[in-house]
Length: 326
Ligand SMILES: Cc1cc2nc3c(=O)[nH]c(=O)nc-3n(C[C@H](O)[C@H](O)[C@H](O)COP(=O)(O)OP(=O)(O)OC[C@H]3O[C@@H](n4cnc5c(N)ncnc54)[C@H](O)[C@@H]3O)c2cc1C
Image 1 (cartoon, protein in one colour):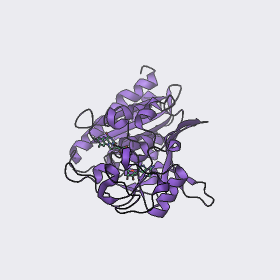
Image 2 (image 1 turned 90 degrees about the vertical axis):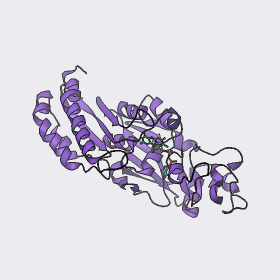
Image 3 (image 1 turned 135 degrees about the vertical axis):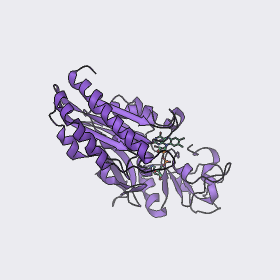
Image 4 (image 1 turned 45 degrees about the vertical axis):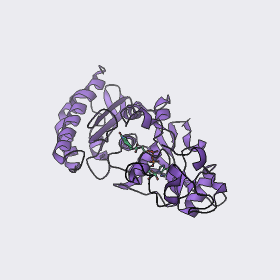
């Protein structure tokens, strides 16, 4: 899907003009509608092109090419220069820093899932995301940048308290970086707080937050189906009680649903307290969601399945971990 091959591939340094002339990719994906295909050598160059050319980042292309697709057999009709960041090594690295995992924005799902420090709830999410071919090119940066309420990895990143690292061109050449919680970054369906000159450079996930993990995706089929609903939960235990729990539900509102107030009700709870709190919590979440009818499902179905998944989590999953029988 990347299109960064053969004669379409040009280094940003060699590009001088848009349009059909020099520096414009001549065929394949990058040649679409005479739009420039920018291939930066490193992050600094990528940030300069983003700022100076208003170039649109492209990593695995699995969302962007669908968004700009034309009729069958034609190339995507991009309207701005395309900035191919999928091959930038510094955006593909996955590293452990003290208590957190730093996942480069352009690391592909296959590599994220294979990393030994990746939390189990994220591995489970990736195992059910799309299909192996797509997981070999798709990225967390693209899932976040697309900001769909049904984005599976985004839902799990909410439950993991992930922070997103953004970079823009700094004063002295070095990238200027900032970090923002994923819940603040995504502001609505397809909308984010990413600035016009910024790139997502990494996703930072705290380690040690998944003594227990639960993930369910509901789609039309097992592979290559966008979610009708996604449900991710994880947390830590203190003996036979809950130390901390985080629960996120995707595709049932304009952004992923998460409630710190409801989660706090579970802090310190043992399995008997979970049983007592269960109805209050299920009703609390059902009040928060606002599912819609769309091409993938109905509001009524999403509401019913949310209730069933909450029941599975509170009645079977959590008690299993708290009994030590999971
Ligand atoms: C057949 C098929 C099945 C799919 N199944 C699923 C599924 O099960 N679950 C799911 O969640 N999604 C699914 N998707 C959607 C898509 O594959 C994912 O959202 C994927 O993570 C996108 O990553 P990408 O690297 O391909 O993004 P791209 O298409 O390259 O980019 C997506 C958006 O993010 C922006 N972007 C990319 N990288 C950055 C960056 N570093 N900084 C700033 N902006 C950036 C782009 O400009 C664009 O707006 C599916 C898509 C297809 C075609």
